Length: 233
View 1 (tube, rainbow, N blue to C red):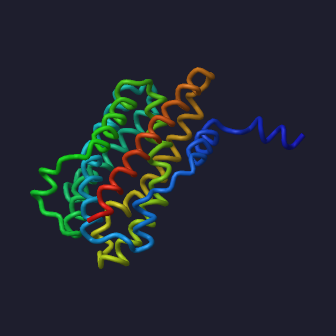
View 2: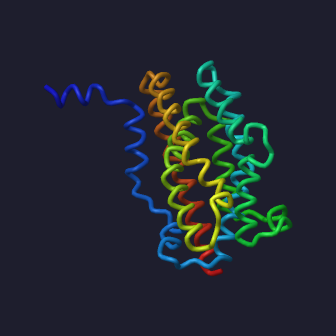
View 3: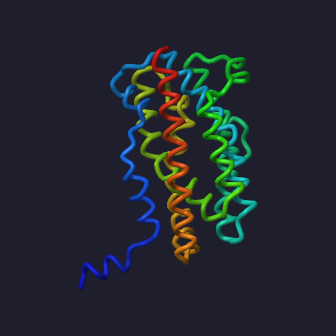
């Protein structure tokens, strides 16, 4: 009887998280970094490539907001967007923070301004636009809230520790990573609440599951391609 109750009380967000974890994906860049197999040049190139995604992340959130029919979810997205822009302080803008990290790893402003994205990076950005701008709101929220933000706090926290230990970076140099440890944990929690509240029928849930798998596939291709490009540097 207790087992039946637990199954009945299982939330849709729990299913989505299990689905994402079930891929068993391990980021090859982080594995290599943790084993101290990456040069500073390799990590610099990774940061440059990541900055190209971060530059467009506010547009993904804006697209979600434009498609959102729910006032409380609009509020969440508006807060998320404000945080991405550093609460109005240019120096705390997330894109400026990742540029600072890349510069501390040796990148120049010219490299950051004129970097040509890898094909997988372009594909990843296009996938994010497709899911947030062209799909149903709940699909986009699943893709971002579960596919991306739910994993960022733990991953970015560990990444910040490794970069500080190996490349003599100060906490302020990895502020882009550290700010997501707190902010994205809250974003993900509230996004999951919205999914549980508004994904009420099986058609919506099935579509959200497909969106999540599409996002994860694009993210994994991006991670593998960037690692392959950086590992030889």
